[in-house]
Image (tube, rainbow, N blue to C red; front, top):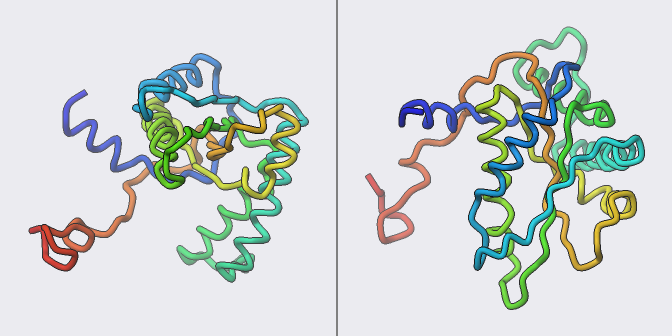
Length: 208
């Protein structure tokens, strides 16, 4: 892959909330999970576990977490279900959120990312040993033509997920990652320009 090709891959790896019913094969998931294993981790401990969730019980736990998460989203972000004739960008985005959460039990693929926390490592830095693996998974999924999304449904359905999957008490749930064949295009992400987020030496000194 050329440098331009890789940059375009990153530029179009966006959160995908609408999927077709087409299943994701084991071969493709294996390639994406293999890419996740190539990520760095603290001390090269590789203290991660990636659990593909397919059973009805696991999917029910995912759906319960999604249901509870939707309630939080509606409360925190004041999100309401759009009127049927509202075609604005905000309405389309809200519909995708409702559709994803309410259909969580039947999304094409769900992977639970978990890690075993390392002693003496500050809490925020713990994520450095699992989130790069997630990003590798997302990029690999995009290269396969899949769309994907990192969700926080594990936080609102943690007890059920732990019980169904049998997660040991000393392991931490990091995220649920959804993947599938997208409905619609995988267009470029919308992000603030470097000039607004980067600085040189001092907090408010422009980098360029």
